[in-house]
Length: 207
Image 1 (cartoon, rainbow, N blue to C red):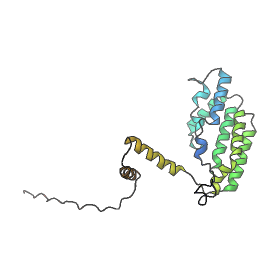
Image 2: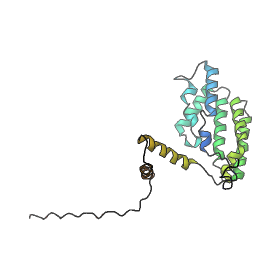
Image 3: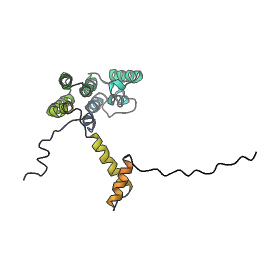
Image 4: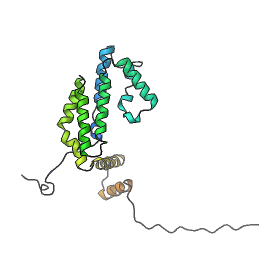
């Protein structure tokens, strides 16, 4: 049975936006850090462990690190990453972020090749799995550049706003009232005439 909307939407293109890799439950660098932490110390991360102390820094972009944060990261990696596996995972994740900052499709392909090399060069199983995942979805990732940087972020934001207003109002029986409340919260510009300001009488001077 052919859907009725088929003539209007003959094809559908999946596109990976920059927020798609960020929506993963755990970044690959976190998996590598936890494994190395367990292998080197024999327990999970605790206060005072080198890798546990820089767990939040490893989630930041390199361009957002201050001089102090960068020094802390280097000190933690030297003390808790003897084989350089966590460092390799951090570099691979940064290369994946750089793909989305490319100017055009050709530069994105070149940076994607650099990312594959960063995943394949070190003997880190988590990076090998990451490289296979990105390779399987490479067309969807590059579609971000062929579609002009399209994103469903605004649609998801409006959908979140609709659900939040409905939750706060404990549901709406009147759809017209529900629609009006959504328009009020969506920041729509209302073309209504302002009422004339009532001008009171100025107080007289007693002097």
